[in-house]
Length: 543
Length: 79
Figure (tube, rainbow over the protein chains, first blue to last red):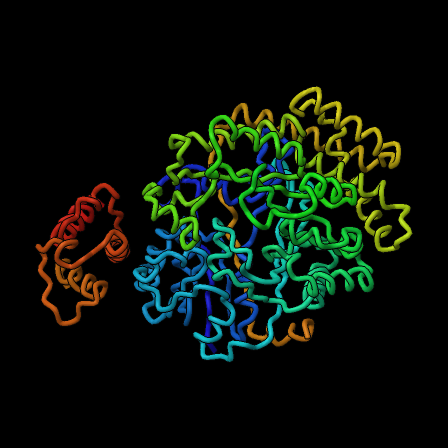
């Protein structure tokens, strides 16, 4: 029987060397480094698994193992076990590590076939790495084909989850570490925004993985059952999911009509696509979070065009209890030192629950990259500099290195003006509860109950930690919301006990920061095994 | 196999130069068209083979395969 190893690139990430630049370990924490990048204690943390590797492993009828963030020693031990195939997933940033890993495989297991995949393969240089196969696109079919199997069989969706918690709770295993399920609905995007790597990687096409809303629903139920009811909230990977109306409508119907558990999902959507929906219907059908690209106050992208103003859209979503992420791009052509700060002010007006501010990144293969290369405006940098916080474009109105400070200052300013993301999330749930708990629509009343539960679970985090908030204005806003929450949901004994524990952890963190020099935080290596029957056994759940 | 022979074999495989005589003193870039990424591959293979780490600044000074052999000897004896 064939044996397959699928792996990410190796750690460490936080050591500055030929493979990493300073702070790369931080970038792996998708919440703390991006969406809740806040200077205070309330930042959230989540390390997102390599979904693609799990999807492939679960859909091969053989023994397969997924290795995430191994140390180099663990990787060598593993390859010595003699695999028939080893697949390495990487981003452009990790290219240099892939070279090393391929050399190691050739030395310790010369007969192993090597496959490389992931967004890093958009580089032309991948031909020189020495792999046997380069997967530039959807990986399950590709691997099946490589292994001589029928590529176009059915798919199962494995259970993939990520912890979401406060960063300061890490290392305190007794504190709540809720888990979120991750579902892959499809790949690629037809919007073809000039800067978008995902869209370019899949040649501006959408490639469905789960074909219908029913399949997504079944994947959610499966994950909930397999985790004994722990996982109820999901993030669905699909660029601009709201473009696929039949899929979304079917998912909404399944969740509103059949779900007795209270499952909900977050997704990515453009303003233009989500504007075409009845938002109440989406909420009754389980929509709980949406990431919308704000992009800019004066966005040069078609997907931002809509009859509905973006501020109005965020307001309506919040009133229905839907939490939001708004993302903004710095370093667009029209930006100047005089107007770039308007972007921060604009984000504050839109008031998303979580925010991504990033630098315009001309990813390989994108139209933006091609245009800038033609204009000779790309700085030559190492592959390890390929991230959202590197400046690699020669901008007409900025010197190199002038843009990122605006981004970092922007994050701080948003925190000081709007308060912590966690507060904005709690306030949104509470608003949703207030607006929906008397709704005539039972699906919306059910959502209101979920919002109430979530509000009550988060509110105690703020009971005794208000002195850690950035200023009096934010403290006043938090207090006002808490007063209202407590008048509606008087704190229970366990809430008060929990709030005391949170206060102690915050105090401990202040002390820790005084005495311990901050060092790199490496993710824990994770090994997941899929046996050869996994595919057959679980196929029934998806048919 | 001597270090010279191993380096030659490694490069032959990498540059897909079956049956061609390799000149150990030839400029890798000019004569064999080795670009920066192919050089990274060569360095990586050599490092793994000899369990050494070639610092980037030294790697950048490599002009021919004999430079690689000298580096391997230097770093191996330092280890």
